[in-house]
Amino acid sequence: NAGVTQTPKFQVLKTGQSMTLQCAQDMNHNSMYWYRQDPGMGLRLIYYSASEGTTDKGEVPNGYNVSRLNKREFSLRLESAAPSQTSVYFCASSEWTGAAQHFGDGTRLSIL
Amino acid sequence: GDSVTQMEGPVTLSEEAFLTINCTYTATGYPSLFWYVQYPGEGLQLLLKATKADDKGSNKGFEATYRKETTSFHLEKGSVQVSDSAVYFCALVTSTTSGTYKYIFGTGTRLKVLA
Image 1 (cartoon, rainbow over the protein chains, first blue to last red):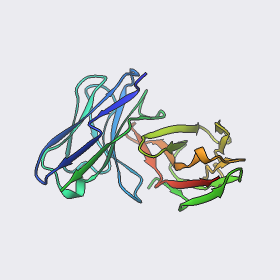
Image 2: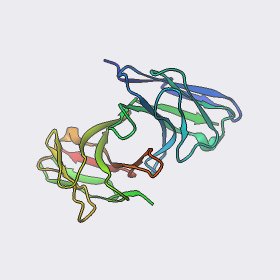
Image 3: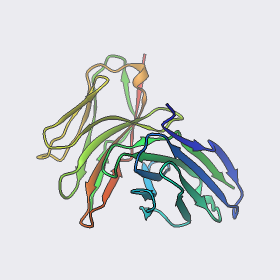
């Protein structure tokens, strides 16, 4: 009963490198989300996918791209990493966009 | 705009003490309200929810009542345990005029319970 699985759990990048964070859910949920969590700022929505085949920008989309590969998988890509993108990234899913969300354990990303 | 405001932490309590974490919100329409809990090194987990005014959500001894008149959703527990030490997030989801939904989280309140 995995729920939401994120890979990798930790990653260190150099400025300018690219990286894709992976997320998969096994709950047959329609909606998926990417958040970043920074100290004192709570969770901020980067992108979300209301249903398979759709993606929309959240509060802080600049510097990121997403792909809803299929109903299960939703990836987040950093094309040219910057130190300001050092954060903990969480993927989440829900039955629909107004429902309670289920979170993965996060990816801790450091950009030097 | 829509927002969620939580009390600043950290909150430090002795075991078996009474807990209140305040949460107030601003939203148009009729949002659903949630409390999530985050243990160290983990993602957020849904603790409880309420979808309409006067609803009481409850789980694991925690309770919160949706108060529309005071736009509040305060989290309470009668007797905390060391294992309740975590960060607690209040959140709301509200529909927009374009038919989409917007999820807003508070900044979190850290609770530390001492034995």
